[in-house]
Length: 255
Length: 307
Picture 1 (cartoon, rainbow over the protein chains, first blue to last red):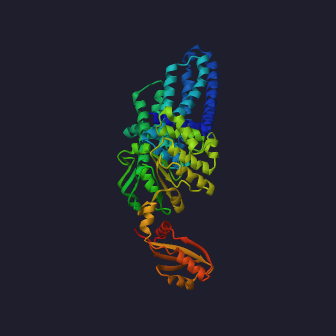
Picture 2: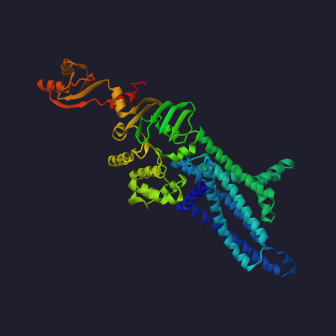
Picture 3: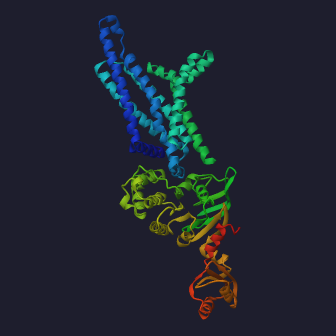
């Protein structure tokens, strides 16, 4: 456990010791802020209009009109941002020969992978946590529902965690960070596309494909539904990614 | 302290190390000598648990490398060929991290970092970023990181490669200073490094053991003959024939501008050879002993000697 903790601290320090953390967090927040501002302004305009009619005024819902599209947008931004966070995790160690230090220390491969995974999760939590500050305005000036807001963030976090596991796997395959980032991005986009592909199919084919895509599971959580099926999906997907990365590292040493 | 038995490592078809057997006793400095691509790095990677062997056994500090890798890793300090440095860390930050993953107890970490900074001579650069320090200091940081958990055994892969002569001397002195406290195996392709720093040597070539033992043992077993190299004002076949006429002289050969004169062990012909050169007015410029181990190594590297 202390080993994982040491590695995690080192990775987080490495993130902030290079420009990458600042650039990623800055661009993520910039985009999040832009979307939030637009959505709130649009919501305001709509709310003004609807206030004329008491019937519609009852219907207007800040969660549906601001947070739902906001979380949707954030999930897309994560697809582009996460590969930048994960690309260096294992590829850089290999490139610099520092993996030799790790493997000749009393550390197991799973500890190395978990340490790095947790460090990236912390980065994700920081990024999402900072966007949550935007919601403070919404909560102080309006009365959004807390439940769906929380499950929405949980969904974002779980999805990001899955992306990170996939990114970690691709980082284990190569010593070139660009290759790792591009492969991760392509894979994440492919899974995003699965959702659209599934709407073209029919029958069991369709349900299999749509089960595999991220969006279906994510959308449930956005609407405030906390289903073990969705949580299990993200957790097992993450574990699968970590398992693959573990196998790659293990096999490299035995070749 | 280090024992290797019939170690073989294959990368697919390529055999990097074949049936290697040698032993290093506790508290001594042993050199792993061989030309490039002889299998030195592979051997060290197997010993340190970075790579598994294809077959054979190796024990370090009493632990089997394959059965008890974590115990071995705790007992070994390792400087890989490419010094594993994180460029964005400070020297002391880096050493602190290595202390953590080498499982130095938290209460002793600070002292451990201070100790290796002191003994590797890193005081002046301890707060600087690793990317900004010189090659020589980077190498010292590499050695410091290997010593951080005060291991019984140090495995140093080419510790002086890429350094300037002054730095090489400093690093060699640093290593010599560790004799007694640690058992050290260092690899090199430079023979003087072995003769200056080490107590014994394992010579390998193309993955095979060529010779091993303490320097004295090797010198004794390989020099059945004694000899000198003589440099004259003009040294040719004519002069060589003169030396051949001396009583007791064995082989005489012209090697470039030097004449090699050998005789069987037990005699001492130095005076006779010098007297002859002076009497005949040959213009004696230099006379030096044939270096046994140097010869041996040259023969091995040039492929002239098989096991």
